[in-house]
Image (cartoon, rainbow, N blue to C red; front, side, top):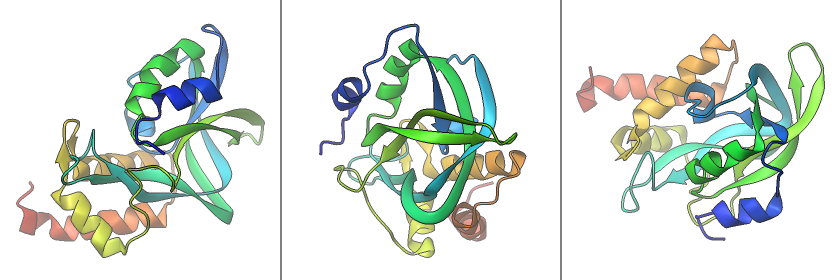
Length: 193
């Protein structure tokens, strides 16, 4: 599958312009909501784990040196916490462009903290997209993130902003926090302040 998924997403989920849809965010959508929304609420989805297995050639890296950004991978019994946004369907024009590098809009059930559930959409970069990097050791992921930079900024900033946002949501994510610890240990070596 091509890394550019804009047309695929528009065909998979055609929406009426003023239709309201819940969108689950688990990566940069948690801390960088650069789109209008009607409401946002902490939420989680079941059966998925957040992993830094997707390549970023267009935001946090380049085609020559891709960064690593979050996607979801299926994992039995797993729970992934994030933020759900109620948006109007016309916002997907912006979001499809933002998430075009391998992410597909898929249907999911979200659970809010009060226990209520709702059907909505989530962007997931599956392993059959051209930008998928797949699993690697935590050390290798941290090293790649530390060295990657793209048009949207440093890959390290992406990871650190996500870790901070997860703490604000009181969400524990061992994968994200393990990478963050390694990056903080590398920081003096990399010359970040």
